[in-house]
Each structure stands twice: as C-alpha cells, then as structure tokens.
Length: 281
Image 1 (cartoon, one colour):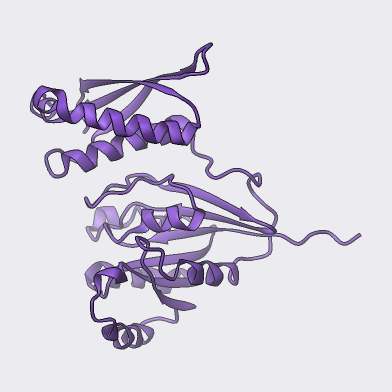
Image 2: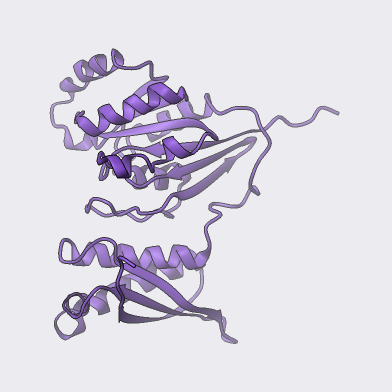
C-alpha cells in the first residue's frame, strides 16, 4: 500500500517594523493568533501559527520587526535559525530603504528561497507605479516570486497561498492536524490584553508594557476565571492605563474579554490588576 506523501516546513515572515507581518500571518492561517496595531514594535516575540490542509502543513513564524541598529540586528530569526524552508520578506507599499537593504544583505548569505510580499497596496492609489517598482526590485535579488497584496482586504492572499504551497518541501508533519499554534493559552490571552492596551493607549505608554496571567482556571459552571496583571513602570503610566474615571481600563477589559471568549469558545470572568514593575530588570 502506497504511503500518503505529506509536505511540511517552517516559513519565516520577516521585515522591518509596522509592515503588516502579523496581519499576514493571521490571514494565512485564517485565525487571529498574532496581535496587531498601527504602533511600531507591537510584536515582541516570535509567534508561531500552523495551518494544515490535506497533505500540507505550513508552520509560520511571525517575527518582531528587524531593527537596523547593530546590537538588535544580530538577534533576528535569520541570524540564529537555519531550519527555515521558506521566507516571506514583507515590505510596505513601495518603500525600500536602509532596513530592506540590510535584510537583503543577510538573505544573500543564507540562501533560503524567499518570496517578496509588497503589502498594503490598498494604500496605493495609482497602481501603475507597482510594475516599475517590481522590475527594479527584481534586479536586486532572485526572489522566487514578488507579489503585491493587501492583508487588510485579502487581495492576492490566495495567490500567495499558492506560491507557498508550490515551494514547501516534502516532509512529515511536525504538529497534529488540528493544532493552530504551539503557544500556550495563557500566552495568547496575555497578548490579547496587551493588544487592547497598545491600541487604546497609542503613544501614551511604551509598547513594552508587560501582561502576566496570574491565575487561569475553569469553575464548576464551565466559566473560565482569569486574573491578569498589567505591569508598568510608574504611577504616571498606571494613571494613563486606568484613564479618567477608569474609562480606558474598562474598555480594554470589555474588548479583551470579548476576544478571549472567542479564543476559548466559552464564557470568561476576567480580572485585571495594574502593578508597578521595572521593565528594564
């Protein structure tokens, strides 16, 4: 009897900050596991998302935006991992600046098949400028494909899926068919809360605000009880998070609870605490 052939591989999603890497991951796996916001530097950890369709298993790694500062640039996924089978290099519209050049320099050294994704084309009014830009980029590197997309509208996501499928290697599955991420529920819950804080507080506090799930249990009524601590640097930032008459923290609580219930598919009681902590320690 002939064995079923399967295809599987790790796919790194890279690029500088705020180009839409997390939105692309969420679109590719049809699940929201990576938080998004308009603020640069929202993703601070590698987020793994898995999609399994028939004999194909795609393991995507959404990475923090690559910094051009030397001490940060050495810490990105390209320099410390050699298990990637495919790379999705994301840029925003037709912006090609110093960070892109530095990333390209690394790509030339590691020699991993790479797709260049031009995201946020919904912001480009005159689409005629895309073709000359693509022709210019083609001369820089031998990308296996250059594809303009919009993670926001979903434009060309299906075409991107097809390119990925055609370039994934034959291999055994690493994860079970129904798994969408190896990340713990506690981590995903903390990220949901952090996303709401970042979105509501915008530039008022640093994105490095920390959320830790102190308690997580399901009671006899099948309700998930969660106690989350929000750590911030000082009293000033604590007051900003709370907002006038507690308005901001109440809204963050409401939206976080809504998304957590969707994630867990059950009712949730969420308790938020704000604590002072030196985030540099």
